[in-house]
Length: 456
Ligand code: NI
Image 1 (cartoon, rainbow, N blue to C red):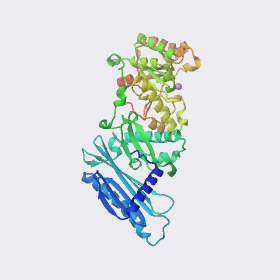
Image 2: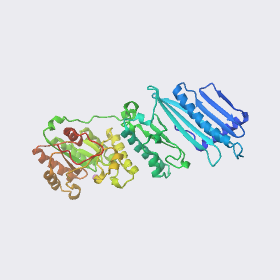
Image 3: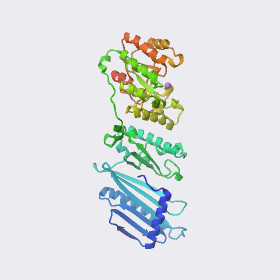
Image 4: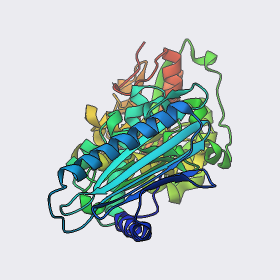
């Protein structure tokens, strides 16, 4: 589907083929030794060239011929209508059908360029997809688990088109991109799964101007595996990341305990986070880290250590921006870059998100597609930087199911949290991660709720 020739190249090729055909100057149809079939016609009024592969499957062949006949008829009607008009340059018709197969799916791409006067060629794109096993025509939704998964893919498509525009210094119109990538099947009629991911072709005008030509993007499997039906995933890339299995605790021991989830934002910090990790076992505690993507590279070892110890690793976005002030692309970028960074280090993509300042609209949640975890105990540790004050605030407000917000970039905050644990342990509390708390409470985290606490 990634067509090698741009529009100009195709027209040049067309002109070249017209020159060859013109010297023959009569209409004929033939099939050559290979599987390709050609139809060539040339008169002093028009040139016509059709290439298509010979396909055994009757149903597919029928559809291809239907397309060819329809396009040809349309062209010939215009030719006929213009019989008495003097034309400055010959009319031209060039239809090309290609087909390929991958993982039991037959892909057919059909492209028509025609010229019947006017400023430029008219282009028509059509594609067919056939499941060789179930013997039916399919569309892109077929590969995805459900509507929601398909929709998540379209958010990524939007993101990759905008990104392509900025990478190539083109200013795509955001509204046009939004409309052209909206989750309708009509917007995704031209695609192909390849070794690198899902390739999507948007014909000219759909997401960019005519001058920008067709727009091709590839969404890598790493981004869409979780949305695809299992048999269409490609996890070969995932497997190259050496996965180490984190420590998993037996939750039975916490069944009758009051629970508190300590969450640490804005890290990791090699010194303070390590200091915290050194002390968690004293209180049989595991906690949740909402890390900044921008801090991962400089604190890889401690992040990995935190993960393997059995703590939750969530995202606090890349640059700690107020997501409510960002464009859709900005939100996806903040979330995606962080997830990719974390995955590079621990081998899995986080599922928990703490938006900076707790800000995220329901539309933003849809774009992020993560479980949004907020808090209901906030000792303002970043402001007072006083371990006793931090500890007292937490102890005073502690209750079963609470989520505590502190920051592991300050030693006073880590000390304050540890002091609080020491005291609260005596009061019958257990210190669990968000994942553990949800499991113990029987909560199946969704993508719309903002979780402030997990009370019984
Ligand atoms: Ni923060």
